[in-house]
Image (cartoon, rainbow, N blue to C red; front, side):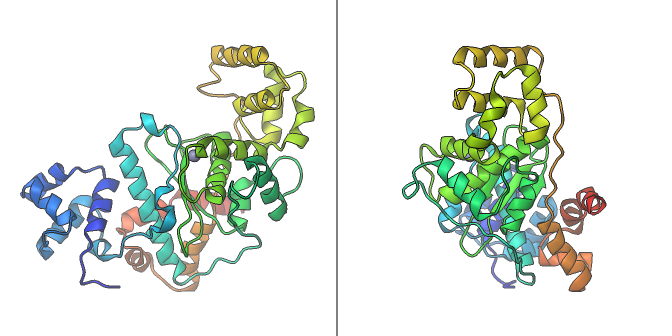
Length: 352
Ligand SMILES: [Zn+2]
């Protein structure tokens, strides 16, 4: 660890992850905002005393600010999230900052632990393959997924070396983010506030981005949605189920395919199993029943485990104490416990 070089990028990341503005931080440090701005731009030095104080204010270890910046690579522009427009900028920045910090934590864990998996992620871009649907079919084949519904998409992603963490985003407007940076496994950050069916859809959508999109394109959201629909509900397999669609039928298909009634209705529309008029009628009916806010029939939340296994390996096999592992991750012990050792892990153990 290079303790001696303060990294201004890490100050920005820490500040944004706590939704603290430059002027708020300046006020608490009793300096001018221009001062903080210049420190963040690398134009002005910072004293040890100030670093100590900032670490306290932002609740990070002092060593946090001496880490190298998270890897950018070509994936730096590829933090994808839906409904970006309606999310306040500071909230989006906070979640992106948290996601980048998560990437650093994973990189720190990977120094001592290797992930061995049966399958792997490989890029298939739209220039080479004709459609997102074809890419979804090829992925299903290469991951050896059986026909029909995918029973546990989280496990399928982790079996291919992807790392998922569920985290409360503090807003329902962003479902997930993903990034596949150089020399790193694909990372997916999902909102723990989403219900189980939406979580699975978000994961499928993010796999689409990871595989198909190395740079942002105008069509990428639509492509990721098409990919997700085909991955979760392959046309040839689901089409026979989608005749005579009614609200009752959508409700009966939901637990089998583990996707929302809304997604099933959209799929029925895309596959021309309902007319536009029928689709609109059913959509309105679902709205009247309040299903657009909350659908009936809960789909179990899929729990990731790789990241927790990596933490446990450090604690149980590599002999790290919680304090030492928090230090390795440059995290305060409380934040570390909250993120990696809270009930999500005990829940995971109970499932096993
Ligand atoms: Zn997206």
